[in-house]
Image 1: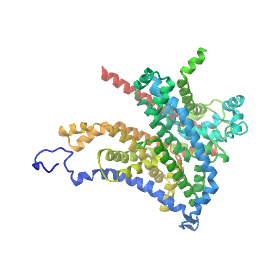
Image 2: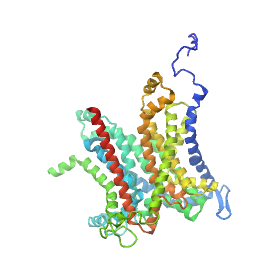
Image 3: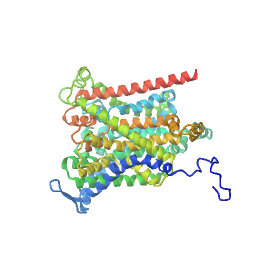
Length: 309
Length: 267
């Protein structure tokens, strides 16, 4: 309301947007936010503080733990468990790349080629979710079993000789090797890659493809210059939704792997729930969080899509 | 070679269908092995056809108890997360207020964090408070991690809503409550439903956070985890298959009703 205008009579109807809201109305958003935000503060943010404090405590279960600013725990934890950290990042990274390579054609198929089958294929992508993922992961024990059809086929084709040479498998078997763990991770997180990819591919205007074709672009060039760049938001959020949970996962490593394939999640779990060495567990968990948050921030910055959420 | 040319032309479709097969294969295995009669404790290799497990799905101790516990937790967690999440989503889209950036990151962070970190830190909180681990701690944890997903789902829907519809309702002398119940809520409903479904699925199938915070309480995923060590009863596969079939049937019926409605509306 500018000062040059005559002050409006109180009874005159005004634009509702310009009316200064009453205090009660101004508080509405805070009342709406309060319960949920409080929940997140108490049960998400506060625990992180507690965990940070636990990680610098010393003591024992019997005598209790005390904050002694013992940062050595971090050094010791890293020194002892760095193979598990590297393994986690390696397995999660490999699974993410595999998810992208496997998921992209399927997302593309649903978005552009499925036609009247689109809904059916989408249902088939989501449907496996309804069987508990632990049961489905256990099914891989059957599929990859020694002497099973898959392993026999891979042996006949001498694929396992190659993978054994690379260190992915051992002595002609797949179960209890890195390959089984990565295979399980890839399988478990594929839908998290496919759905965002599909959403961003589906938004692409089909006429852009026609235009590229009219300008003598080959299908490969069209894909490289038009489709793929436009699907980048889906690629970024898909890789994040795959990598983040995969890096902390211990289910696949425990069910399909061996002691040589333990990931950092397994260590945190056993330190917390079995060994009951809370400071080490908290330190490990904190390092994992720092690594993942750092990687995610750098990745989002570099890919230039900051408005993901 | 015409065959090679056909393959080259349909490379995307073939690759996509192979991925689909990779995703469906374990479900088929689970289904087939629900009819198995295993030797020994583990149901990993095919022995002979049997309907035993289907006739007695609760025949294993604690299995159906854990299933019903999981359903209860998922129900309450969905209710809680959907209510709190919807309120946050409306506040974020409809109002201006301070600390918006901080609140946005507080909602985003739980989704950008490995589950094991949230699980471990929540356990340190519960241990420090001396809380009794069990139903309530699991429920608290589930509401916490489902909340962000509900907010994201509802926010997307409310954001695409035309505000003029509500203005029109007010112009037609609808009060604020009436406008909300008769106009705003029905339009936002698909987003809220999507958020609720997601929360239910996430809660029902959650393992890592539950594993840390359940104490000796056994949810269905915890039961499956334990059985992977002790011996996997065929009944697990029966329940996995039943859930799969029920869900697919529900989706198909929903589709059928939707297409019926559409054709009815057209006539």
